[in-house]
Image (cartoon, rainbow, N blue to C red):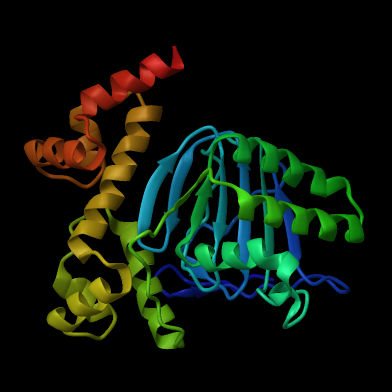
Amino acid sequence: MNTTITKQKPSFEIIEPGFGHSYLYQKFDSSKNNKDTVWHYHPEIELVYVKGGSGKRQIGSHISYYSNGDLMLIGSNLPHCGFTDILTGNDCEVVVQMKQDFLGANFFDIPEMRNIQQLFEMAKGGIAFTGNTKLKIGDKMEVLEYQDDFQRLLSILNILNTLGKSKEFTILNGDGFSLETEVKDNDRINVVFNHVKNNFKEEITLEEIAGMVSMTVPSFCRYFKKITNKTFTKFVNEYRLVHASKLLAEQNLSITDICFESGFNNFSHFNKSFKAFTGQNPSEYRNQLKNVIT
């Protein structure tokens, strides 16, 4: 069951496995869409496979664009946003959510579980898997739908063990994301993330966002930098730049239109920022995508 949260409030997601289950398995497709689109967090570790399509990864303070599907592992209480919607163009999305001790307090402390234990530790920053790992595990995630409860549990352990041995991954918050466990910190950061998500096309002042979490501007700047290892201004700009990269890949808009559609009000600043962020100017980025598709 998911709590219903209004637009500006932080979203704490309550995850309740069905009777007789220690984890929650869900599959979403065209007949059943995942409606968790706001920033939210939960104590459960979350494994997500998106088959095909393209969209945004928004995990902790990391924001990036994915294409041709994705495979992610998200650590406990790491704020993140939903990865698919009706515009993503994916075939399906498979989600497995489990508490770190879902098989007992000491189960993962045994030597045979060392790879999974290390995997859970890395997942605190969020992990995106690539290459053959994404393809291989994606296939296994799809098969979960047809397995009985015991087979599915064994498959999940096998999937986690395989991921724990893989070298094909990126830690998304490589510089750290030090969200404190106190509820007030979860609430604050989710208010900030949800506001940026809903208003990044408009100007967001430090005075405005600091007031929303009842902090002075200097206190908010220190707090946000401590949590995310980046300034609030950098975070907002990265959000806008990832949105621009998505539009460049998917929409036949002029680069000038994309600039303003992404929340930038100065074309020169947009060009300079995009090149610093991606290593290419917007035209080069779009042309490279066309060449890859061709």
